[in-house]
Image 1 (tube, helix red, strand yellow):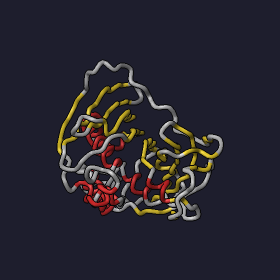
Image 2 (cartoon, helix red, strand yellow; image 1 turned 45 degrees about the horizontal axis):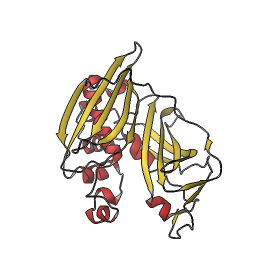
Image 3 (spheres, rainbow, N blue to C red; image 1 turned 60 degrees about the vertical axis):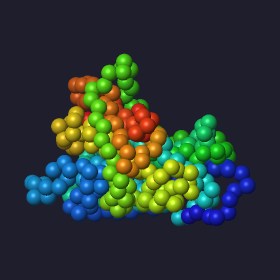
Length: 295
């Protein structure tokens, strides 16, 4: 719940442990094909619904489930703090991949608050479970409320396991690809993923928020990069994906080019680790410190 009353001070209580609403989603051929189409990911595993075992859910569907179960209606949150919030990072781990016919319940919990130089960092953990209670995936994600101060001590109930680090930074690329983002991409993704924020689709709102134009969703950016990694490094097989992570940085403007770079690919025997990034048309990082772990 939000309130129009602006706080006299931009302070955030040092509280964690609160749960979001739980919401349940049926994984259907319609939802899978729509989501994959929303990020121009035309891998046959998301579209050929006559294949044995049915369709594999696009791994990015966790963003749709998370977005639609993020609400805490029993918590009043000043609109001024909402306006100052920016999505900072995401880290998703898969126990298995959802498939057509699965029923997935999503619920989040606030797990950490910390004071950082730009403001207050808040972290949430979302669990995605099937109808038998089995864990399908875990998403650790967080954002920063710019200019805010933490009222109380820093708290951390849980955090994602450490990510692998690059072994070198010599500037050599494994591969690089540049392509244009369709002008209508934010509108298509909004409807196909059921993730709506008017800064992505309504220019008047974007300009009022200080943006140069509508911008593509951060989750769409990371999934477009992930599409390239899966197709180029995992033989187009998303079921090999065990974990992906990245930090949200600069803006991607519809109609402009983006570049996805694979910075390093490492075979560690029982797993493959790929480090990637996305840059916008100005060469600025849109997705930084990207990591994919696969079988």
